Amino acid sequence: MSKRKAAEKHESEDVEMASREEDEEDSGSDGDMEDTINVDFEFFDPKDNDFHAVKNLLNQYFASDAILFGLSELTELVVSQANVGTTIKVNGVDSDPYSLLTVLNMNQHLYNIHKPSTQSSAAASASTIATAKPSHVMTQIRDYVFTKSKQNEKLHAKLKDLLSATSKKEIGLILSERFINMPVETAPPMWRMMLEEVKWAIDEGLPFNFEYYLLLAPTYHEVAPKTDLDEDGPKPMKKKAKASDPATFFFHPEEEMLQQYAEFVQDFKLTTPPTVAESKNTFEDYGIAPARRMMLIHKDKIPEVVQLMANNS
Image (cartoon, rainbow, N blue to C red):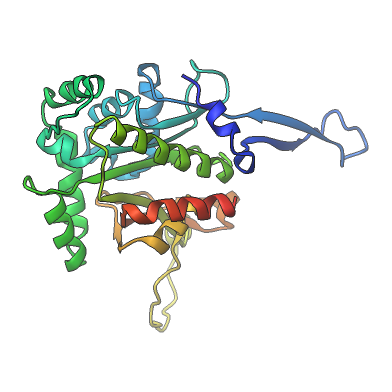
């Protein structure tokens, strides 16, 4: 089912965009001529046919630590949850998604929690969820965030409490990833749709009444390229200078806004060491060292930051 009509209700979030590229072969002596390519971004619910493309996006999201998780199981959770979650495509419903934003109930998948609904249709859907086995991949993710949050005692204690089997409050795990060349202007409509769908799901008695949202935002800092470090020949002795913490950058600019509203924020390194890639075309003789910034955000703050995203798009 296409979500395009829902997006078009908000003119300020119109995602029909134009990208430009130079046509050097056909321009002759006039190198300033450009062709305009209109790209129509359409929003769709995740579906079974998206499995492989969504799995690739999740692999990109977890970077070198993707090997620590059962991504096939996680992908199945995403594509089978059609009531909450959005993908962006450019060639119709059967094409591969270029972007993904969804939220999964960690407590639900960890402990097979079922909260009865007063509405028969919602009860049937929730009953289907309740008969499923507890998720192994969600256990892996829970243990991962426990390990990565240990250096922040208050955050660690909060997560242990919220993700306990007896917790009365639940956490929504946000999964947000897109191709690197996707316009950032596509993010605000996706976040708005997610909030709307969560509200509709709650109204239908489905388990999406999160107290907190957890995001493992992809970040990076610049480092010297590996080729510079591996050059042959003796290295001159240099006086050691006091090292300063490198600046942290976000792969997704909208997630920098999210951290302003987070109750807890914690940076952490990936468990599996990534290769320090040489990226001259992108970072001018610098490579990048991927990392993550864990954010725990209260549900009351999410609408505020989504409005901020829309205002800045």
